[in-house]
Image (cartoon, rainbow, N blue to C red; front, side):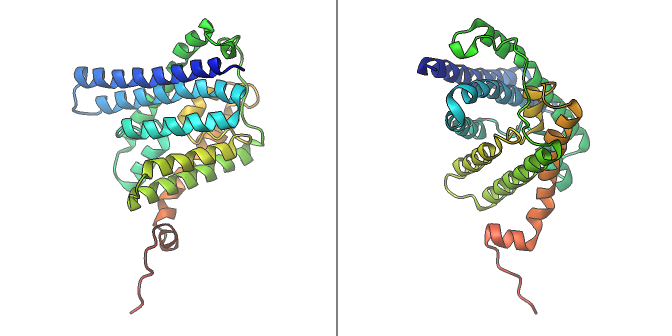
Length: 263
């Protein structure tokens, strides 16, 4: 495939990021800063931005390989880490907050709903862009039936998504506490590396909303198997990161905390 096609994909992803920034600025002017509404709007925008870019990343991976996909994903995650603010576009971070007592079950449910709405609805915009066929890599993709990325059994896929999500969350928590220089770049590199490692097995989504927006109803797995792999697997991994991160042996390994002295 020509580099022009890769350039079109790059322009589209940059355009999505710019559009999301404009949407954030507009929402700050139009939506009151009090209450849950601005939080939900911010989550919906972040999820739409994430999913729109990742739809195009599928095109990049299919035509230019995993290396090009990884580079684009790394750059995007660094950018998102700088502009999303309190939004995560990922439901299990709110589940962690519920366990830690930082938010309520109601807010967790509402944020998840907003993320699903933003992530799933944005496909129509992506579909129109593909239909225009500005690049040869978009030919026939707008109305093409999708295929699942799951290349292993659903239960093994759930384990892969769960363990990788657990490792991602432990890394993020460690970097948040230690605050090293270039923490956001390190976090993005770890996340991208794990995605690439799982790419040919489960697809390496590590985000239920992203997986649902991109692969719900695709041939290759049932909806129930999708839930097992991308919702239960990832969410269990994230939830387990909360108690595991508090274990003294884990904190000594990750943070270098001294072992408590015996009296």
